[in-house]
Structures are given as C-alpha cells and as structure tokens.
Image 1: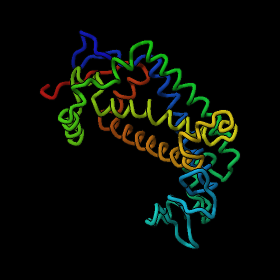
Image 2: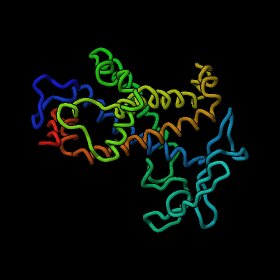
Image 3: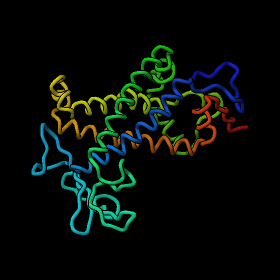
Length: 275
C-alpha cells in the first residue's frame, strides 16, 4: 500500500493487492456467520464463568436472562434492564421469546444448537486457514513489515494523540497521506490480526474435549474451559466493536471510494484541504 512516486491528489492509484482484497471479503462473510452462529450457541447457556468449570448452579460473571416480564444483562452485581432487546423480546410472529439474543441476530434465526454448531465449526476452518494464508502472503510480499507495523516515531504519545484529535474532528488524511495507514489503523489492524483472531481460534480449540486431550496445554494457557469460553466471547465482542467502528469510518471517509478500492484495488487520492 506504499504510494507510488507519481501518486497525487485526485488521481486513481492501485491501493490494495489482490490477496488483501480476497481475504477481506471472504473474512467479512466468515466473521459475520461465526458471530451470528456463536450468538445462537450462547443462547443455549447464556452465562459466562471463570475457571475450569461452569454450570447452572455456579455463579456467572455475566448472564443474559429474563424474569416473567423483563429482560436483563447481569455483569457481576450490576443488573441492566434489556427488555425488548436481550433476554425478553417479541418475535416477528408476535410471540414473547426468552432467548438471550433475538432471532434476527443469530444463525439460524430459530433456536437450534446443533445447526448453529455446524455453521460455526464449518466457517471456523475458513477463518483459520484464511488467516494463516494471509499471514504467509503478507510476510512474503512485505505487507506486514512495510504497511502494518508502527514506526517508532508513530508510537510517540504526542503523535497518537494528534491522530485521535484529528479523527474526533473528522479530519481524515488527504493527498498521499491517505494512501498510508495512520497509527490508529495500524494499532487496530495489528491488534485484530495478531491478537484477537488468534485468541478466537485458540480459545475455540480449548472448548473442544478432543483438542483438550491432544493439546492439554491449552487448558493451562487459558485457565480452564470456562475461562476459555469467557475469553472467546470477549474477543468476539471486541471484533464486533472493531467492525462497527470500521464501517463507520468507511461511511465518514467516503463509502464509494473506500469500497471501490477494496473491490478493484483502485483508489482515488483525496484532494488536499487547501484544494
């Protein structure tokens, strides 16, 4: 993604390689399917615990539940009313449902733990193989070293704070600066690619009894299967937050130009503000 010497404001340049574009769209579909099927799996037991084990009579640190006429989200000793959204909601048929997450947010939309597991595990292979392929290709072509790893001067608190203020004011980079990832993008992308996605994969493996027998070190690494499930859920919610912020930034920066660059690779360099 390094800007070519002839790149200038207003011109179309080649921004994203084919491997980046393919991985982006395959991963986008894969992550959404896994998030939605994962929410259905969570519906089967909408409680999270720390430690080796977790069951109905243990005390969860997070629970999405309902009473006869209300829904709630409980985190520790704090209970947040969620009636109509989580735990207690009305289906499109007008029936009151008590699942943690509503049908429009899950795969499948009707309750089925077995179907959700099949969707989840099938796309887990695509996620794992895709991230390994992307890492390999990005190491070979230098994308990680050249475009993603922050430079020492970019990690200076003053530089990071400057970028935070610029984004808060919706003052996005223009000219050739728009062709490079800013420090906030680099931190987010590196955190997802080398932090959240590997954690998602490893904690998913930890919840498998077969993998626990083959790789018992996974249970030691994450402190037990119940803890692995909690970490898996937290990492998934952080990825969801990243996606929402990413989509918001695309809308604010100019959706046509941004989406075109991820489909064709071609990106029109934004004009300088003075222009």
